Structures are given as structure tokens and as C-alpha cells.
Length: 134
Length: 401
Image (cartoon, rainbow over all chains, first blue to last red):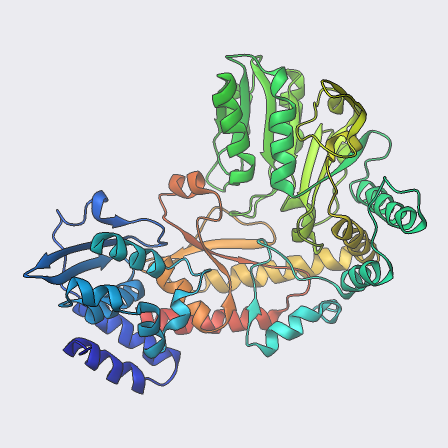
């Protein structure tokens, strides 16, 4: 399976990150680059529950390819979500179902962000994405 | 100024956590355990486990004796004397649920239960749900700006319809002692039952249920350096007579037939099934350990550490404390910084503090906050722990601002 271009960039930059500070800076940069959601999209129906911060996720199939958008009021989770979108946007429904997202975060050196006790909500975002993708 | 804990080495997990690069400052959630407790657990399991109160054999007699010794020690810890009994439950939450179900028969529609705005969910939801079941009114005592229950308001809200008052001794979010003597006097003037959630309070200083005069006092073993899965419920004899069994099963019964049964009085009548025997024995060892410490020295240490924590927080720009913490902990937010971001970066640096709503969602909503960071101290913490926390906090804020 071909990696989307953004995913290749993410792997490259996070692979070179040395230490937690640089990873945190990168996460915030990725979060800042995430396109804004409209006010209408930041509604309760699109809110992902189970997050310490507020996270909104919307997704639609365009010409057979998934296009997700998201936002959060917390910067680091916004970065994590941006990395998630970098991996999945543009995939077909069949491709999306095959993506091993925990492995994706492991490859980025961010696997710990998915641990059960983390209340940052990344797990909840993944779950919502699965629900949206049916 | 260095503040060292002479008791730190008594808790082997602190050194282990330090080797993992972790600074443990989440003691209001649970505490590390003294070696004395680890030894007691190992001794019990290595020398012959047995069920309590049932068997006539020797191992059973030994286990029962150790179990009942712990009950006596817990009673001594609270200075219960002859005025009441200690009931072991599976946690403080279980103890509060036992009360909410076991006292249910006393309530009629329209009766009032009074709690406060700062209650942990464990001392809110059992009463809230009881109120729903019996069509009662749940009255919430408001707080003053310092996070202390407003006594003037309480005097107006505790009245002839009040059947029960259930309040925390020490808030797990604000770290402020609550005015129990005055609140208990108000409740008693109206013949209301009184329940104290001592989950946080019992860990700091010694408390005397005879002097307090409450009907019930609840605490959790694991927050008091004891094993988990164990709650302690003190009940005054007169109040226990009104408490009905909630959970039914082995050993709580006097006589059972297929279609009816008679039950034991307290404490065994409220300890259905096999209790957490090892945890009860372990708590006894912890209480022995704690009783052997110089309580004044412990209190002085905790006071000095807490002052150091507050001073450090106040020295930093944009930090807002929740209420006015007096002991043990402080919760705070930082202006312009999301607490989830701060929690993330503190975690990255091996600082174990708590972020979120601290099981007191209505209280956080009252402060109009989605969450806060809580630093909570124990007797084994020292000023170096706080220094590491503050260095990590500064690093995190530098990144986030």
C-alpha cells in the first residue's frame, strides 16, 4: 500500500526527532497546520466523547476516498489528530479498513499516546473514525 | 530550603519509581505502600491463607485473629472506643453505597439529603440515585470563594426535612478542611443522620470519631498507605441499628431457610461473602507502621511541603489555584494553557500528577473548568520531588507559550 505524501513527511520528521521536546514541538506544528473546521462542523454531533479535551471529527467519502477533518481545543491532541489524518486521508474505504493505526503511531514514536490509561482521547478518536468508516 | 522525608526509605516503590524516572505526586489518587505492609501480605500468603470466621481449623483461627486485630486497629485509629463498630467493605465507594441502600428504608418522598458542592462522585452519586429512587430532594451546600462549605448558607439549607447529611472532611480537589463540627451540629439539631467521607481527610492527621460525633465515617485503605480493594466504615451503634443489610450471602446470616433468613448484626451482617482478608491484614500492618511514626513530625513535614508547593505555584505567572488549599494537595490551571497539553508534557517528563475532573465533575463545572492539574503529596515526598515538578512545569510552559 502506498503511503500518502503527508504520511511520508510525518515519518521522516518524527523519525529524526530527538527527545520529547522536539516531538512536542513537531506535534504542535502539525496541529497548527490542520485546516480549521467551520463553526457548524464544531457541533455536538461531531464531538468525540471520552477526551480530556474537546475533539471534533468529520469524515466523508469523496469519489470513493475518505476525507477527514478535525479540530481540538488542546494543541498536542490536535497534533496527534493531524498525524492521524495524514495517514488516512485519501484512502479508499477498503484501504482504510486495513490500516493498522496503532502501528502508525508506533512508527512515529508516539505509541505511548495510545495506552489505555491515557485520557488524551486519541483512542476515542480512532474509535469514532472506525464508526464513521463503518 | 531542603525538605527531606525521613520515611521515604520505608516505601520501596518510591525508589523503584525513581529508577523509572518517575516522580510520584498523585497521592490523593492512591499511595505507595510501606515495607511493613508488603511483609505482612507476604507473610499471610506464605504461611497459610484461610477463610475467616468460618473454619474451626488452625489456619482459619490464625487468619480470623489477624483479621479481627485489624478491625481493632482501625477502630483505634479513629478512636471509636465502644461507641461504634468498624465494618470492612470493598472500598470507600462500596461503603457509601452500603449506606445509601441500607438506609433507604428510612426515607420518604419529599425528605431531603444534604451534600456539598465539592463532593467526589462516590459521595454524590449514591445519594443522587437514592433521591431518584425515593423521590427525595438532594440539597447541595454551596462553597465560599476559598472552597469551604458556606456555613451561613448551610444553616438555611439544613432544616426539618433534612434526614441525612453526607459531606467530605477534606476536598480531593481543593485540599481544604471542611467545617465538620458546625455542619454536624446543624444536622443533629434536626435529628439527621450524618455521614463523613474521610477518604482524603483520614490521610492527614488523626481524627476522632467520638469527638466528631458523626454517625458514619468512611475511608479507603489504599489512600492511607494500605492495600486496595478495602474500605473502612465506622458506624455509631445507634445508627447501625437503622442500617439494613445491602448485600446478601455467606457468613452474614444467622439462620437461613429456603424462603427466609435472619441476619447477623454489625459488623458481620454487612460483610457478606469472603472479605478481602489479605488487604484487611495488610491494613493492620500499615496502621501499626503509621502509629509508630511521630505524628507531629509527619504533620510538620506535610505542612512544610505543602507550603513549598503553594509558594512555587504562586511564584509562577498565570497560575490559578482552585479554592484555597490548606493541606495535602493543590489543583490549578494556567491561563491560556489547556490542562490536557500541560498534562501531556508533564507526563513526558516523568511527573505523575493528575489531570482532569478528579471525579468531581459538578465542582469543576462550578469553577467553569473542563479540568485542572492536581499535585498531591504524601509523607514520603520531599522538596526534590517538588523541584523536579517545577522544573518540568517550567519546561512545559515554555514550550506551550
